[in-house]
Length: 239
Image 1 (cartoon, helix red, strand yellow):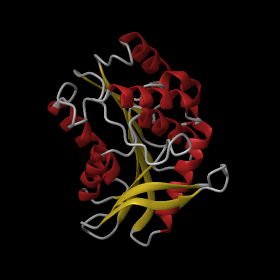
Image 2: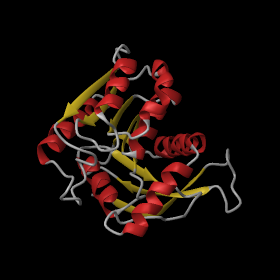
Image 3: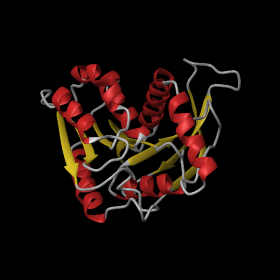
Image 4: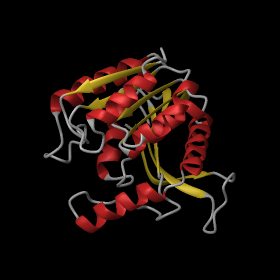
């Protein structure tokens, strides 16, 4: 499998910053040589080794995958370690500081980058985890994409009114013991979004970050296997 490591440089001149308008992304191409484009959005810890491994996992399924830096305006190349308290705290701070409008614009720029690649068939899916799950949901509401799958988005409940704008096939994966999204909040999400026939919510007997193989205290193999199977079934429709 071809792997292109950070920094693949993507330009977003719509929101020029003091330190430039270019940001990095990890890109992994499928062994088949071509396929749909998948934007893979990171947790609060940036483009970590696990995010790169997950991008490789998705590429092996036949997708052209790009995992962009969402926190580059706050700190370039940030890759925090959940097990280091100071880095974990910084990740939570970045979640509160990120500008969602600019982040969505960066996702749009990443989509344009993928579509420019001859290996990409022009169809685009978006997926993401934690904060990336929230950004995935917002991508479905605000951008023209073909399918989205969000894993345990932590702030979706803050943007429920945007659910009415979702017209593409959308899956939300949620853990029923997620310490960041209570059952009450999950209930609010279901009540607001399930009337939209384009949105399907799947629940798992798991907590937050259940798909992260690098956290043995969070990872739930059965839930991850079931969620990924549904994700790949959705995205295979883009081939």
